[in-house]
Length: 241
Image 1 (cartoon, rainbow, N blue to C red):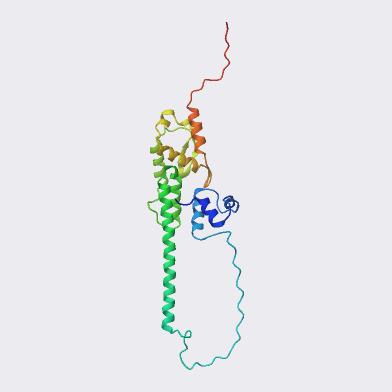
Image 2 (image 1 turned 30 degrees about the vertical axis):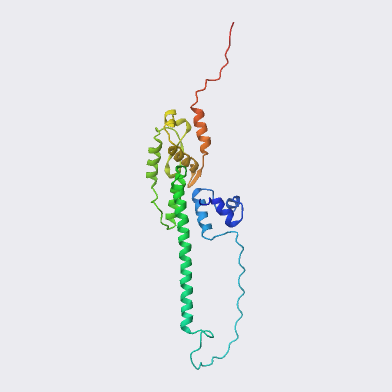
């Protein structure tokens, strides 16, 4: 199972997850967290000890040039041909190491994408992750959907009648209020529908440009279920005998 963002942060930096926000490395959004995890997996560590700058080399004493009587060996006991072969092998080994690292990172991206795509409750994170990869120039297992396509998926999955909404969520989806969902609509939800709605609730309501305020799905569904329970209005009853 792939690491979560905070696990990757604490493993590589040795710092608590709260330091990521304090240091301004993430705002806590899905896109920022995913981008931060990719940087960490790529070898970046903001808390790595700084390397000391090398001292400037001392100027060598100028000596008069003496004409060479003939070819000078590259190194004692090594011919120029052997030296060239060593350099070629070093270049080949470096390229092979770079290829292995690139493939390892590609495998990690594919695994993360597959895990997010398998869970309806991660639908928003899945689409944001694919967009983030494509913006960085990486290939994805499936193409990122447009806002309009995602809005259609949300509407078809939940099948809600138009009514009051909390505001615009991720990808321009209108998030419903608990009062706009009827008993019959709630009873018609299957686990996939609930997972998708939960994903958009966690994605939040837009509060500004590229800023979203997340909603706790558990609180939302608790409020929704309580609103569907018939309750007698509070009143004082008098009995006469």
